[in-house]
Image (tube, rainbow, N blue to C red; front, side):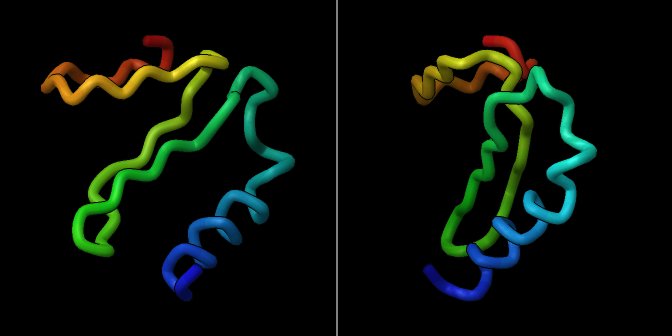
Length: 59
């Protein structure tokens, strides 16, 4: 992993005690090694289908 990815992992570890117990994952979207979006998923299954639909944390 490069330094940028390690920074994102450290960010999660730093906030670990503050993250809601219902959070299953933190999704980080990169384009050409630049973070363009992040979201917390509250569902144990996350489907990435390539659509332009927004992400509400549940579907």
